[in-house]
Image 1 (cartoon, rainbow, N blue to C red):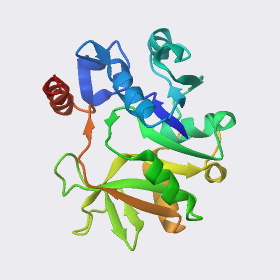
Image 2: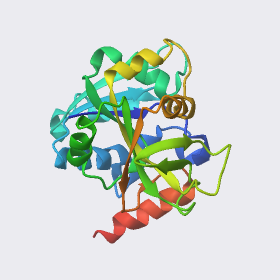
Image 3: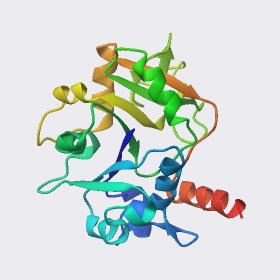
Image 4: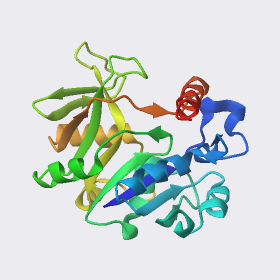
Length: 231
């Protein structure tokens, strides 16, 4: 199994906390957040990792290198000339990608059985699957509608009463889906996944355990408390 992690965002919601460091490199109990993510992946035998890097990427590279000292293999794909957004960055990383691969946001800490998701996805012929959580706007604004095992609407702009699920922070894709992504163009996740819902090509996989993220100061503090509670 292969994981692509989006590490190129500017982290504007974090203000001065991410002024001189990538969001993935913010330290919690002395370790960069990205190291916690890698530990989760390694425990589930995901050791092939591609980092889509951008802002201050040299700080990530200096710390993690090729990943060997962390027991994984890390390769880097860079937004060289201009920001591409997460999906544009994914297109840019195309030569590095397997026929089936996971993607994960660089600020998400997740509790998901990746092997189970992988197996479920291979039982179907869809281009993509998004892991979802019934959130009811609790940990962030819910942004998904699920019906009959598929995501049929996504995005916060057109909020409806049945939009009670949220993107958990990871999805699995077939490489063929990259044919839908324009090259060298800024492309974010909402139009990408919205397009897949219109094509009826986005499966849903529901998990029951909450997620953590560090996208806001409040969420970062909450994750910090969670890690401290582990002892």
